[in-house]
Image (cartoon, rainbow, N blue to C red; front, side):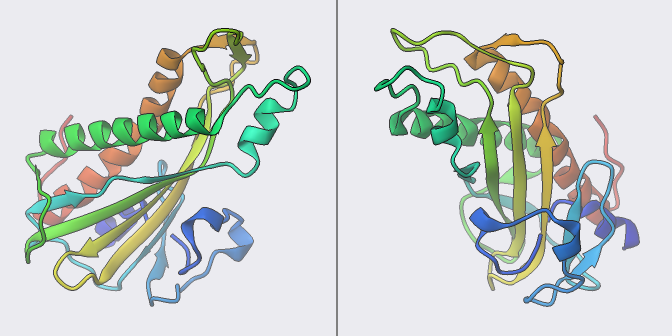
Length: 229
């Protein structure tokens, strides 16, 4: 059980709206407003809260919800700050496209990892169904590839960063079992490099894969099996 709680290193703070959650350790509560208790984080996941004595052994199916996606505060303003006078480089439709891309990638990464572990993904509730409700917060794409006429290729030393927020919920009662949050960043090359849709997508995938693996390990541990690549 101790290892299970530690592996729940995927789950976060109080009932604060997810768009405003901070990562200041000085503000991290030992007990959330829902009564979840802080458990040790892992190498891949920073903060986890869970119901004391939690067991996930009876969950056979996963209802994976599409993640909400929130950009870093003032992201578009900062992106456009150095644009020529009167030229809006990043538009609201651009942000919508990036959000949709992140959502699609997240669902693909998590579905493949869970299905590789033998877990069936469903879109209904039941006594053996665990709801996974995620969100991507503080999305910071350093050099978005807008692929529009008149826009220049973007350069950056890193593709960017994002933070995972996730809740594990009993699908029959909507009871919150655990929640977690973890920030992730693309590596810094210290050299300016051209960023494209392909490189940004690959960087996002590499940030998401450890989260998907951690969730699968939690479920494997509950079933008493050893995670295998």
